[in-house]
Every structure is written in structure tokens, then in C-alpha cells.
Image (cartoon, rainbow, N blue to C red; front, side):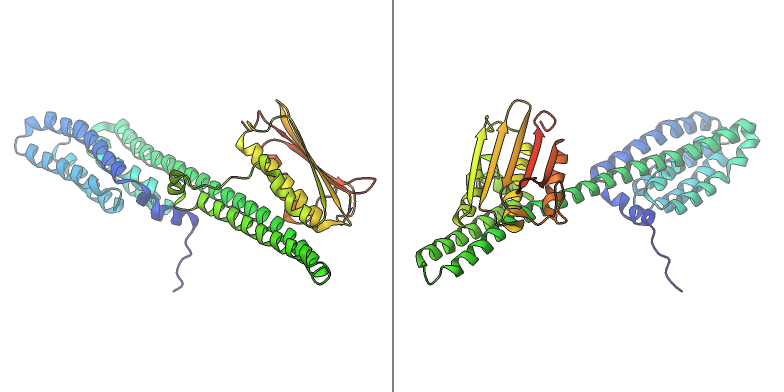
Length: 389
């Protein structure tokens, strides 16, 4: 017989209770046990005084229910069955105790079962809990039956509400993890794509002048080595920032300099080693920028320089302009080559321009990237400071 496929509802329910901490488990037990002892225990004592030998038996059954509640997270179906049976016996011994009150522990367990087990299981439990309700008609009439049914349905509904809260929390956590993974992927792409593009250009230049100009070839090889070391350093920085020992690294103070607009010259130097002129112009103070804006601006410049190397045919000059004022940061990167993107205001099909657009969107800014009418390619970003603060 083919096994039934597990639905998402089953997957969630299978580990819902296991995510509850031992402290919360104990708090749930003490809370439900306190309510059952206070409400049902008091009612049993008050009513059982007139019934002599029935009182000790009823109190013993109440204690059994309280003890069974200790396992309501681990085995709610069994605990529900035990509390329902003992509750019915208590009500049979002391009919003056309402059926709703006698089944109070079972209703608490039904709430837990509804929150932690598959819906098909909790619905069956709900139906089973509704079966004794007509018995209340004999002592409480229609009102007693209605109250019993409403209390059972409310207990099940409360469990479903808690279940929805758990599901929403898990979905938000899963979405946060996916967004963080996407951000890390963009970081790795920026580091590797930029450095490898520079290394490819430098390797080609070294090969061209290896025999005629060995000094220039050695300079290009040294630049390749430096770029590779820088890339490895940034990759280590990313791994340390998101690895399990990130807190230890921060505590020991061994963090390497993070990407920032203050390090633009480090981006430009490898390109200059290939013979391309990189002109960097700054206006305003970028020292106090929010970290998100600072990182986004740095990565936009890095990706724009990478695109100039990879896609700007015949480019020998790139102008980088960073303007910072109280309201925003403007980043402009223009090369003088012939873009392979094919036309003005055209977005690239790769991750480069898509990543820039995503970074700008995350800080609430705007981006323009496209070929210029007179030749060259321009990347212009405006990053508001207030919205990212």
C-alpha cells in the first residue's frame, strides 16, 4: 500500500511541540494545572462535601488529570483520552459539577492538541469531545448542552489560533533566512566577479608584454596576487560574519576592514594597473553614513567598474563621482567605451545590474543605468540617507 504523502500541515505539526523550550513546557503545565485545581478542584470539594465517600475518589481523579497534563505536549491524544474519561467519571460521581467543568482538563488538552498536531487529528478529537455534550441536557437543559459545546469549540479554536501564530513566525523566519542567503550570494558575486575580471585583464596584459617588457609583466602578476589575496580576505570576512564563530571573532577584535566608500581607491588601483585611467572624485563627508547606504554605494561602484572591464569595448577611462549631502548620496560611474548591452537605458541580463537595482531598492533609492548618446555607459544611483537610517 502506497504511503500517504505528507502535507505541509503534517510537516509543521510534527515538530511544533519540539520547538517549545522546557521552561515554556513547565509553564504550560503549571498554568493549566493551576486552572484545573482552582476551578474543578474547588467545585468538587464544595459539591462533594454532601456525598461522603465519593469526594476522595473525585479528588483523586482530579489529581490524575493534573498529573496527566504534564505530558500534554508530548502525547496530547493519550492525555486527552485520559482526561475525558476521568472527567466523565467525576461528573458521574458528582452530577452537580457541570459537565463543562468536569471536562476542563480535557478542553485544555484539546487546545494543545489543536495547536500542535495535524488538523485532521484535531478535528477528530473535536468531534469526539462533542459527543458527551447531550449528556449535559439532563442536568443543565439546553443551556448546559450549549455551554459544553461552545467551550469545546472555543478550546479547539484557541489552539488553531496559536497554530497560525506558530506558522506565521516560522514563515517569517524562513523568509528572513532566504533573504539573508540572497544577500550573501550578492556579496560573494560582487567580490569574485570584480576581482576575477581584474585578474583576467591583468593576466592578458602580462601575456602580451611578457617577453618585451618583463618588468610590466611582473607588475601585472603582482597585481593579480594582490587582488587574489584581497578577494580571499573579503570571502573570509563574509564567512566570519555569518559563520557559527562570528561572535568569537567580533569579541577578539580580528575583523578585517569592511567594504566602505573610504576604500574606493582600493577598488580603483587594480584597474589602474591594467592601464585604465580611473578618476575618483568625492564631494561631501561620507564618514557618518549609515552602514547600509555605505555598503550599497561601495558595491554599486565595484559592480560598475567590473562591468566597465567586462562589457565596455575599448574603454580606457572610468570616472567615479560620489556626492554626499545631508539628504542623500549620489554615485555616478561613467566609462568611455562601447557598451555591449546594446542601447540606452537597457538593463543587463546578468546578476550585475540586477544586484545593483536590488541594493538600491533595499535602501529606498533609485538607479539609472544605460548607454550614453555620445558613447560610454553610465550608472547613476541616488541613495537617501534618512530612509536607511
